[in-house]
Image (spheres, rainbow, N blue to C red):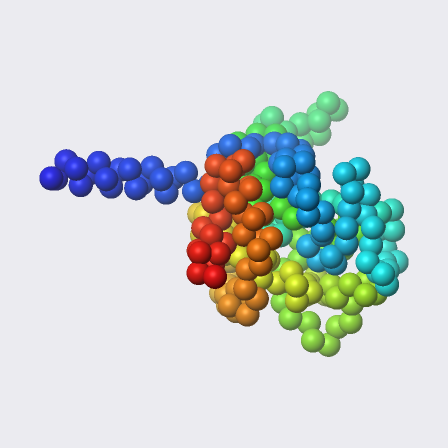
Length: 242
């Protein structure tokens, strides 16, 4: 019995160890798979509900407007809901560089480019499709790596799209908040390197409760799990409770 118990424990440990993305290492490949295998029948952006076609052209909702990054507003981009910098800066290659991170002219570099070149763990986190959502390029650019919080005194800078960005903070439209929350909770639960602040965790837990999963969110999570070989357990549990 003791041997069986040990084997069961080891089995459970192995299953938990497979909770992260260990299948897709290329960010470019992840984006391509999302375009062709996940969103092919639901080409709608996260923040503004804009449609996009198979050639990545954005068809903005009526009344959408932006004064900045106008060219990028015409193309769909794949946004890290939990910004890459939020987990990337835990890697020494991001913070300090690496001996391999030297340009052809001998100049050393660090940051995302260096981490992506030298660290496989970073590559898997960066390419995790559970954390990637389509966005209007201009909105992706403006959101940058800002954390989410409520901005009741701020007006949207995107016309009919209710995305708010101010003072290095962002407030997403109501329709996006549940998906954002369950993505943050997934990253926090799945990757030991990433830890939300207490205030961010409180907000995400609140949004998770206030904005239930939709049929599409459940379908999306299942499609990604079948490709990437790991689940968003947060989304799956909410889908099972519907």
